Amino acid sequence: MLGLKLPTDPRWVNIAEKNIDEILIDHAYCEQKAASTAISFIVSFPEYDELVREMIDLVEEEMSHFKMVYDLLKSKGYKMGRDRKDDYVIQLRQFFPKGGSRTDQLVHRLLIAGLIEARSCERFRLLSEELADEGLRKFYKKLMISEAHHYTMFLNFARQYGDKDEVNAKWQKLLDYEAEIMKSLSKHETIHG
Image (cartoon, rainbow, N blue to C red; front, side, top):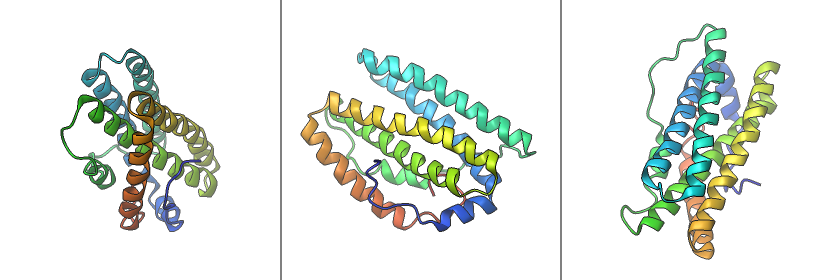
């Protein structure tokens, strides 16, 4: 369903389970960044009414997810800690060249956002199926469903605002690039790494 070309190494779940505090902290920051990304679309592309409306809803949803993760952290006695760089996202953003038309910039940003959501969805599925803690499994299953919706929303907007055939070709190339990135990841206690 997600179209990812390289699944997460199954051993990542073992790393995640042994470092669940770090996963939850990283996850909290991922939710903040997702809300910031939605705000960035609103600020950068205000003329796209349908996109703006969806991004307003997304900001609210992502911040509610942040609150859920934050509350879970606190209930387990964990502190937020400082944010870390997300190597996965940094590398993804290098795929498309800077500049180009405004439409190209929008489509590229939508595709990257969609891919981040797809990978998050895949990771949440693994956590929902493999963690020993039943409460965490249920928690991640609920979030997995949201991430799947976000992934399709971003991809559909890219296809709506760009030439569909070109967007599909770019999406496939981005998926190939992301698979190469993933070969060096899945070794750390982060949602994407």
